Length: 118
Image (cartoon, rainbow, N blue to C red):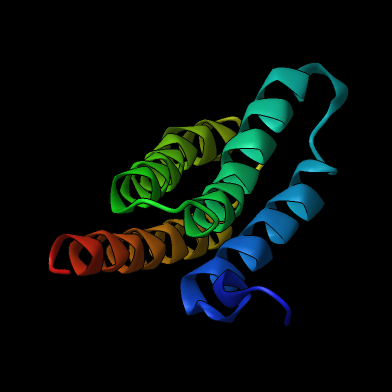
């Protein structure tokens, strides 16, 4: 792993999450492109903003990107819920995804607090 952020557990979880979202949205019917696209973008945004934040020089910049990553986590919640309500995601998968998102949100909050305490 060449970059420091790749060692972060939250980054690894975010990449895994985005990969699984991509896999599940491939199964969505044709008329749900809007949901597929938005959910994939939000899921991918978590890891990309963690990575970009770690590439920034100032604490303020890093903090901002981590806040955006956390916002993307929150964006995924209603998208997953819509997928569940439309019968595209089953209850077990919805609960699993939401649990993972909650864990990642806590981890990113820890990164932000760590920056604030330095």
